[in-house]
Amino acid sequence: MKNIRNFCIIAHIDHGKSTLADRLLEFTNTIQVTGGQMLDDMDLEKERGITIKSHAIQMEYMYKGEKYILNLIDTPGHVDFSYEVSRSIAACEGALLIVDASQGVQAQTISNLYMAIEHDLEIIPVINKCDMASAMPEEVEDEIVELLGCKRSEIIRASGKTGMGVEEILAAVIERIPHPEGDEEAPLQALIFDSVFNSFRGIIAYFKIVNGVIRKGDKVKFFNTGKEYDADEIGVLKMEMVARQELRTGDVGYIISGIKTSKEVKVGDTITHIARPCKEAIAGFEEVKPMVFAGVYPIEAEDFEDLRSSLEKLQLNDASLTFQPESSLALGFGFRCGFLGLLHMEIVQERLDREFDMNVITTVPNVSYNIYDKQGHMTEVHNPGSMPDPTLIDRIEEPYIRASVITTTDYIGPIMTLCLGKRGELVKQEYISGNRVEIYYDMPLGEIVIDFYDKLKSISKGYASFDYHASGFRPSKLIKLDILLNGEPVDALSTLTHFDNAYDLGHRMCEKLKDLIPRQQFDIAIQAAIGAKIISRETIKAVRKDVTAKCYGGDVSRKRKLLEKQKKGKKRMKQIGNVEVPQKAFLAVLKLD
Image 1 (cartoon, rainbow, N blue to C red):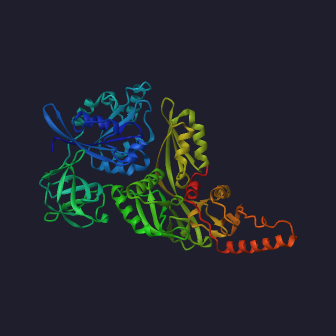
Image 2: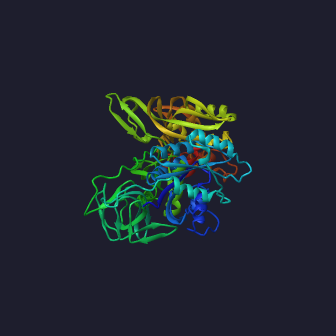
Image 3: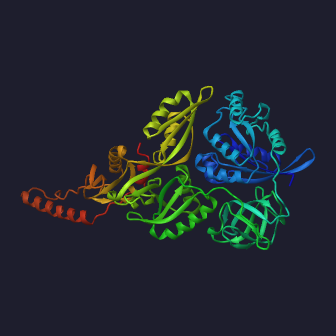
């Protein structure tokens, strides 16, 4: 156990975590690097150049004549995947904090760092990309010293591209990070920190042993679900899975026990023996709280069950996804899914399409509101369709967040304008170093859900970084905005919005839908309504067929007769005709600005 080190890599997006992880693997001869990212193996990760999933891998390294086993977990950097990071941190004793030499400390760096410090991890600061022409290692060192309170000599300068500093990082990992603590004689306790679905082997759970020993063929049970299994195969994670006969305290490995249903594996659960169980489960990480809710519906109604099994399999791989069945008048049966943010929602949609071949419609994302009636009872509402009658409502509370934005002084003005436009309240601003400033805002979560992040990046030319955490609920003047097509409300397009924004939003939605809904042979009225009051209207004109073309000359009554006949047909068509809303109309409502 003395020669085991478990550590993860944390950093802001694009500070070079995965590239540096590849260099470490190459240096320890774990893999032969063939160019391109080795750890990010999902197609989506390669295309977008981001890490979506944490990746665990084991390396062996000779240091001062002794052999060490290093278990490395590479983590995502985007704020939407911070749950992946919290699970990785729970399975480690130390962390490499990587900061880009040309960009300095960013918002997500700080939030991941605090998460690691809360778990008492040993932090090794590394400045990456030191080989770049735009690198400013001296200034970045000042920032790190101020942030961590460490000595300058403890900061390692490295480059994931050239491999500089890799040897020093490995030496620091072995010397500074403590080995896992635990008792091999105690009953088995192993923490599940991830799971994947394999269509041939069932569900594979990844775990870290805190106490005890597990051997192949042992009878084990999962503490929280109480289900019992045989350990058919156990082993360690290299580039492929490598089977072993036994794993001891401090090891990180996988277990295959022929589990078929996804509900039986809970990330954060504890594995123990049936014969000699542990007294209590390991205090793992907290339950994930989804921030954004959206309805996901199959395009064909008969694909509903397929969609359910696809979501269940995806949930194994991505524990932060939550879902429950719901139905909609316009779209039929589907699921109400909870996501950690908009990027997360986009990735889930892409993965459903690629990995499970599921074509889905996603409704406008929204957040959950607490609605209090006149008697003081509270109901939690996730979508506008389930809102009670406005006359029964006493008050509506919406979730607020504490947002922190780190930027250079040049962009303070535009960023403040953006935040105030989103109903934000300035809490404080602090100068970090030189011309870098951190601004704190209290903002409604509903306002940042749709396009805040994209706008922030564009007005700051990419120089602002953003991080947030929930800070409770506050009363707010919210109303339900309905969109009517020919007098029929389309529930998938209705939204909850603040009173001040309602008129503007209703008008813009009507204009946008007028461009997107195809013309029919009858007039279509698009209206935005608050309760019974219509606040905006657009009309899509009918496509007319010229029925009088064949009347050449003759009396006007011949033309009249044909037009009257057409008028009756149009009237009948308007009664029975229905308007198809194309998928892109739902998406366009998200990107109104």
